[in-house]
Image 1 (cartoon, one colour):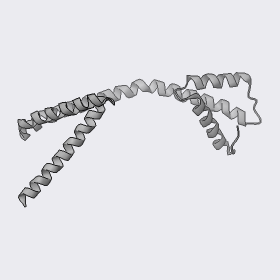
Image 2 (tube, helix red, strand yellow):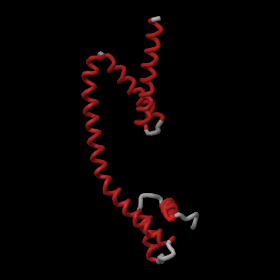
Image 3 (cartoon, one colour):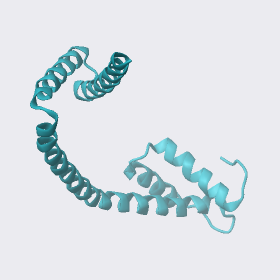
Image 4 (cartoon, helix red, strand yellow):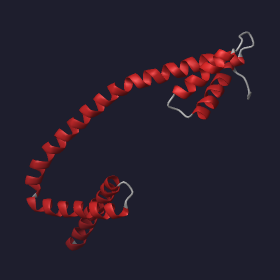
Length: 152
C-alpha cells in the first residue's frame, strides 16, 4: 500500500512540474516551437539540478528570492499604473467630449454643425480605440441614455 501512495505522490509531483514547465516554456518561447523545446528542456534540467539541494536549503534560498522578486514586481506595477494614468485621463476627456457632440446629433433642439462633425472625427482619430468601433459605441451609448431606438 505504501508503494501505491508513493507512486500517486510522485505522479502528482510530476503532473505539477510538467504543467509549470509547459506554461513557462510557452511564455518564454513566444510561439516558436524550437524555442519552446529549448526552454522546457532548460527549465527541466535546472529544476532537476536544484532538486539536489535538499528541501530545507531550497526553501531557505528560494523563499527570500521569490519574496524580493514579488516586491520588485509590486513596485513595477505601481510605477506603471502612475505612468498610464495620464493616458487614461486623456482618453476619458476624448470620449466625454465625443459623447457631447454625438448627443447634439440626437437632440432636436441643438444643431450639429460641420465643425462638430470635424471635431468628432478628430477625436475618434486621437482615441486609442478603432474609429468605427468608437463611432458605433458612442452612438449606441447616447441612444441608450436618451431612451431612443436604433438610429443611424
